Length: 95
Image (cartoon, rainbow, N blue to C red; front, top):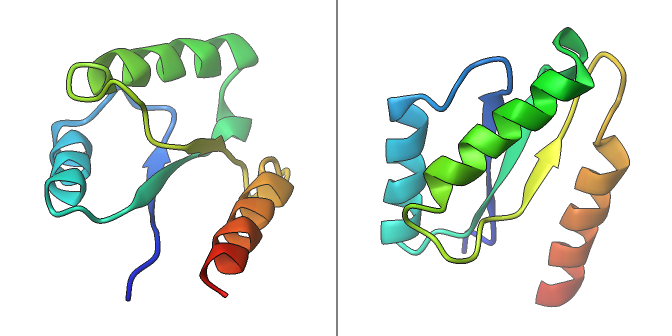
């Protein structure tokens, strides 16, 4: 049984129709998911905040409670511990 899916979204781009459609599809099909915003090392903190705000505004059109999300960079290892802790929390909940 699928416990959680992770959607990887490049933070450098504004919300893309295909990403939003996939998120809606997951929710419609009751598939639990979280969003991992990637490539955060490529833009400034201010740009990250602005992009997150744009995504939140888009998602709030369909949800009262937003899905869990993480900020990550594979280059700088940003978010690695948060994501691993989240996975551990999920694993502990199904044991």
